[in-house]
Amino acid sequence: MTGRLTHIWRHPIKAHGVEALQSADLATGKTLPWDRAWAVVHELSHVDGSEWVSCGNFSRGAKAPSLMALKAALDEETGQITMTHPDLPDITFNPDTDSDAFIDWVRPVMPPERTPSARIVRAQARGMTDTDFPSISLNNLATNRALGEKLGADLSPLRWRGNLWFDGLKPWEEFDWVGKRVRIGGAILEIRERITRCMATTVNPATGKRDADTLGALQDNWGHKQFGVYGVVVKDGRITLGDEIEVL
Image 1 (spheres, rainbow, N blue to C red):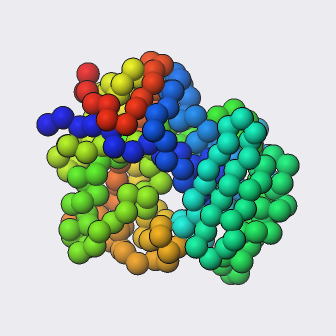
Image 2 (cartoon, rainbow, N blue to C red):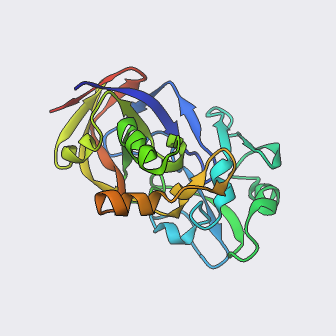
């Protein structure tokens, strides 16, 4: 079966908003451009963005479900981000200079029992992905549909906070790519590992409310809590919606 690229999504601020792209220029050893370029540090963390650290240092959807409903639009020339949420007025801000304004804006949808967000930091070396290497996540719409059938729900792919999505494949076919290389458009990625998922995926990205036991359904039906795979760019190139994915 032939898979084709159906979605490219980046998340300029880790766990805070998603943005759709039509194309992207991938660079060897780099994340998707501007993906997780910033992150929101909570009050118990002393991270400054100078080096990679684990996701436990940041505010994120697994602990604050309402964050999953954020949408973002980054102006690459000005560095301004416009962010929307169903329960908040829109905001446009510069994450490098307007951290306090953003923290004040998002505070009403943060759970009061969780450690409060403190500030935005820029990931200076590379995107602040969940992996200790500069990853891009690849996900299969057929796998998403298979899980949705088990749950009796139409699951939005946005639950998975993924970068690249494909259709035209068999469910779980992407797991066979681990240890191999795939070509997408002009770029080549080496597939490193499966992605183990967290509570963020239980949240409806339209509402910011938990409404599906994705992790339980994965465990009960397939014996794991994994969905999608992480890849690393090993050859520069442009990718565009509609590109075929070829296993090398």
